[in-house]
Amino acid sequence: EVQLLESGGGLIQPGGSLRLSCAVSGATITSSVMSWVRQPPGRGLEWVSSISGTGTRTYYADSVKGRLTISKDGSKSTLFLHMDRLRADDTAVYYCGKGTAASTLITAWGQGTLVTVSS
Amino acid sequence: DIQMTQSPSTLSAVVGDRVTITCRASHSIDTWLAWHQQKPGKAPKVLISEASRLRSGVSSRFSGGGSGTEFTLTISNLQPDDFATYYCQQYKTFSTSFGQGTKLE
Image (cartoon, rainbow over all chains, first blue to last red; front, side, top):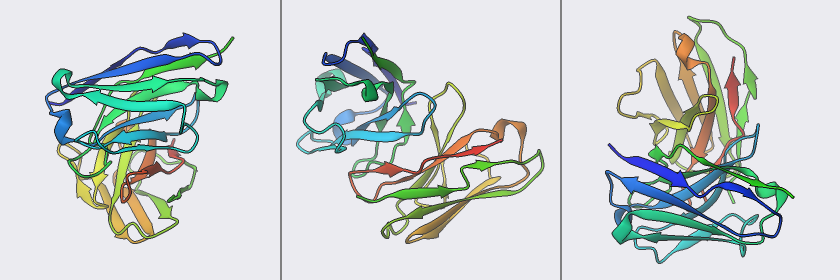
């Protein structure tokens, strides 16, 4: 069974930085597209970023381009999201998701980690 | 970017009903469409992929259809556990996107 466990969320001031981690077990992340999806309080799902199986291709939503960086460490089966210049509208539960070998279809979700950007 | 629009936003039903949720894509996505179910305070769970393929362990009361730009999710014989919010997801492109959600109450 594939399991994903996010960590690293918390309260951060506007303009600050944070790094989220997603530990994956039961699957090889170097063989899968991996994604981050967020959900602001009381709202719907919003795609944030994806990374190819090899890690050579990355994709970002316009709202986070230039501020958030996705990466992964295959040897540790861990996905990361480095977040810079955080804004109040980045406040959300952040989920990591495992895709297939060639698509962003999310076949398994983590339980989510809450990021709150506030002074 | 491909925009996904779901209707209705809220759907009222009772146990035993048969309900249908619609998802429309701004451009053709063939059958690269999934449906996810989310309960309050929980992570989403994938129900259907490739528009109509039921994922392992998902009840056969759920069915999906459509292709191109218009898709449906139908739930037959509603059970109490089905009252949740449902999202469609297109994955034709790496810049995936979700519908705004349909709350089944």
